[in-house]
Each structure stands twice: as C-alpha cells, then as structure tokens.
Length: 271
Image 1 (tube, one colour):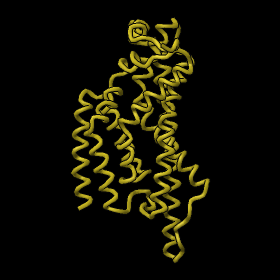
Image 2 (cartoon, rainbow, N blue to C red; image 1 turned 120 degrees about the vertical axis):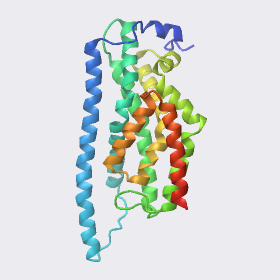
Image 3 (tube, rainbow, N blue to C red; image 1 turned 180 degrees about the vertical axis):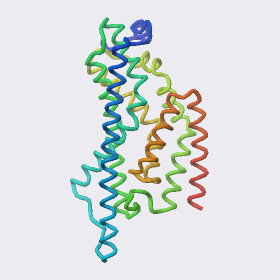
Image 4 (cartoon, one colour; image 1 turned 90 degrees about the horizontal axis):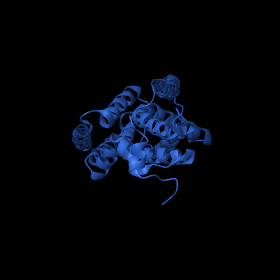
C-alpha cells in the first residue's frame, strides 16, 4: 500500500469530534463566501457587458450589418474564463461541508489548525471543475459554429433543447448519478476510503471529490445551453438546486423528481 494512503480506521481516528475549531470554521466559511461573492460579482459585471454588446448587435442588424463573426483565440479564452468563474460561483458553496470535515481530519492528525493541505484540497476540487469548463467551452464553440446558439447563448433549436433536457433528465435517473450523489452527500465516507497524507495527497483527494461532484452535476450544467449560458436567474436557481441535492435531507428524491420533469419537458420541446 502507498505509504501516503491511510486505512478507514486511521482516518476516523483523526476526526474525534468531526469538527474544526470555531476560528477555523469561520476562516474556511469566510473564504468560501468571499470566493463565491467575487465569482458572482464577475458574472454580474459580465452580464452587463453582454447586454450592452447585444444592444449594439441589434443596432448593427437593423442597419443591415452582419453579426456573424468567427471566434478568435481571445474569444475562446474569455469564454473559458466565464465558464470557470461560473463553476466556482455555483459549486464552491457545495464543497463547504467536505472542506470543514477535511480540515477537522487534518487538525485531528496534526494537532493543529488549518494547514496548506486544506487549501490544496480546495484547489484540487476547483481543478476538476476547470476541466469541465474547458469541455463546455469546446461545446459552445461547436454550437456557435453550427449556428445553434442565440445571441443570449441559448439553444435556438427546439430539437436541440429537447435533446439536452432528455439527456440530462435520463442521466438524473441512472445508477451513475445515484453513486456520485451518494459520494457527495457522504463526505465522511469519502475521506475514509480516499485518504492520502501530504499536500499533494490533499490535492489528489480534492480532485477526486471534484470528479464525483462533476459526475453528479455535469448534466445539470449542460442545461445552461437551454436556458442561456449567462442567464443569471437560472444560474442562481441551478445553484440552489445543486445545494438541495447535495446537502438537503431529501436530495436523492429531489434529483429523481427533477430528472423525470426534465424528461417530460424534453419530450414536449421536441414534439
């Protein structure tokens, strides 16, 4: 066995009270809140810029000027940055229970407060969602090239919208979704079976937890192509929905009900 890997019993012994000190709890919670607020502030700023740009495009269209433009490298980079910041704003709050428990495990083992490993765990989690952001950027580029997106970055095809809803809804009902959601809803179980010592081990754990979270929520994020990638109201609604799924008392049931509703909406959109 890798010397950095610990057995479930060893990990459990590191978390005698399953809690961090009041100061550490405040520090971790405040950091998550700050990161989330900054991400949302950027999204609001970006939304204002896009609204002004769309108004300019409508004026150009009224004058008979074309609005179709090929993506540049800068367009690709800013689209990726938009997705990455959006994912941080939506997913960072859901990582708080895991980060608090991980910090408690580290404090129990090292007999000290928050360490660099806690930050490394968080960076690993963000890295997983950054990978998704790269994939979402490529998907948006493909849809743009196929002229299937409106200026508001929402699907302009009823069939495409229906297909996305059907796929997302069907995934909500699969065993893969249930397995990933169970991992996300059971942070102690994850730590007991995935513990690695050291800063690098913490990053690995954070990334692995992020992958499970990604497996739980990727289909929901794809719905942004239906409602509008920068529709702040729907982004907020999805953020609340993901929180309910992952930390609510009936999260698994809510996930399945939502999945059935998505399937019905997808059928309606296609027909």
